[in-house]
Image (cartoon, rainbow, N blue to C red; front, side, top):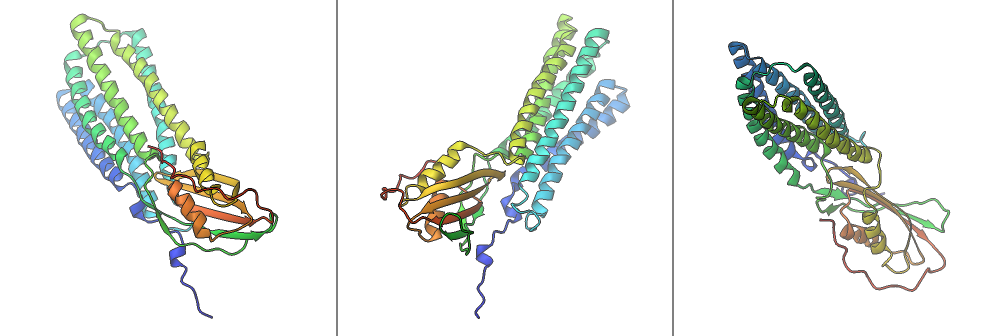
Length: 347
């Protein structure tokens, strides 16, 4: 018996499918932040500036948070080809993003506590030392935000695979499979929650530095001392809002929530434009940045080759893992309809 080569039918995830640009930019941001941290701690210790030392340790918290982002990139990329991950390692990004969102909430609550405490105690503020530190921190955060922001626009290309499960009648178990790999288009609508968490972390700090510059300037020259702790409360509230939004979106991917009813409608309309096909069951969900999975069960009186249904799905929506189940029905559902116009992708 001649053995068939099944290699081209098997889904292989490799490290090239991952956001290497985002990983590289994260390294740069960590390096810049680490240099800033060491510089502030060294100069602060030499001059005795408490403001410099405090901001240096604050920069250290950024290094730790961004380090989590980098570890997630490394973990997902180096384990991309392991079969123990049924649908790849894309959800590692969502898990890291969710964890970073929780850390952002804790940081924001600490900021709010410090702000409320300073409103009550009215401590003396060294404006002469604090203001230059806030300006320097703002510049560093602007550079970091620009680096991470550009990584949001990079797409990913992935393989898509279909599996044919043919059955005679509605209640029989499926058997037999075939399909070859097909290249799916990049999916710009899919988010890298890992990179987004790092971006929000740095952007939130840039916003905090900007508020601090305004508050310190008015406190120094106008005597409005209460603006400095008040900005801590306002900044903390805004960061909590962003962090909760990030956690909610990352949680949807972690829990396999359907990405969008619009995606399912596109697939359903394209398949039901073929002969008398009716879609009995359909699920589309996010697997990670640039990756979707689709499982669809169709019923028809005139089953075609699975490649026909596969091509219909992949021309309608970019899919990384595609499973197609075909059921034969003895009675046609309707007269054949003309093929639908090509579906438009999400912007």
